[in-house]
Image: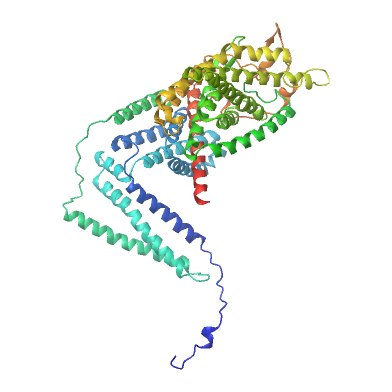
Length: 270
Length: 331
């Protein structure tokens, strides 16, 4: 063809074996982010909340539990809360149980690390108390986030006297974490694919990814805010009218009353 | 019937555990084969049932206490292999966390309560059912099966206790482990179980079986209507009622601590010595001994132990079923 021949160097078999790259951290980051995105996406698609309780009542109950746990003295009240949490967990499906237990275990492990020196300063009681309290509080939180959708929770906050700006920020954050996560995953994947052999410069590219995500997020946020402003959003969330109290609500409120009674009796304060 | 450590010689424990190993292996195999993965969590509920049943201590004639097990009930509902797994797991939780039943004696306790009890009870249930094929025959089968199953299990425990002084004595002729011969242990264990605990087991089993059959038949037969909420409500109710088990104040026969045993009166005279193995033997410190949490009032601690124990069993089997499902998906 055209009298030209394939040059010798092109037809030679090449034996280029790139050195193995140390990109374990990249894989882990990609996997972690993808899992988070998938979870956020599935949480948006979840057809209904597991518990048909008004979100504001659930949020108030959670605050009550966390407050009482931190105020209580001794182990009695924390033991009660932990037993109740185990009972609630046992009624959930395995995936949610696993997620809650993982979250609680990592929080407890972190608390144990932080409290470790106190073992030598003031004995095992404060060490055990703080670790258990952390574990109980985080479990309560992860149960709540496991059984309700993110937007239900922000809806609950709208009814509570939470300043509008916080709800706006949380709302947008929750909605955009998965979008930005997808973006970051794509960039990570591109970085991985384009690194042949050992790429010593990879860590510096991370800054680029962070910057890229930040710039896109700003763009997206501005677009979103502009779109909301065009539709008449003034920064204030309109207070929705109270809906009728349902049977699960009554059950929850009764449980809260029981919690208060248990705290008064076993909290160790009075 | 939870034999503590140091009542039986380590060789007895080893022999009985060795006898249990093939039973456990076969049970695990049969459960995997017969029970669909989505029904594995039911095993956890069954284990929770037996765990709670065993917390209801009843005062027995002779000043001791005893309890139902519920193993035959589970055998009737889910099959004897599942019952073996469920009772084994709840015995493991009791021994490892609550100090109820010894660690060395775990295999022996499993032999009595997870093997003899469900399998003999199930065989009797099947026989009665084939003789009387009506609905009444079924309940009669459950009642007779659970009654005789529990009595048989207590007989086995009594024999294990009773052979110890025949086999193991120190240089001075004093028994090293359980000091009571067969002539004492068999009547002391079997008569109270014949008179009270067996009846309680039969009553518990029949009423729970009837309740489940009426409210949530799908729990037993696949395809029928299923109401897991009702089963959970029943488990919660049992947990909340568990402090009734504290009303029986005595110690169960053969479960005394080393401090108690020398004052136990048998045949008009106290024992007067502590068998040497109980003083110097293996000792395991359970995290929550006797279902009592530190600084927590007794009744509340008992309820919390019941709730947490039952919940842990349900959670464990849910996670197991999840793990098995995932393994099947990837395989």
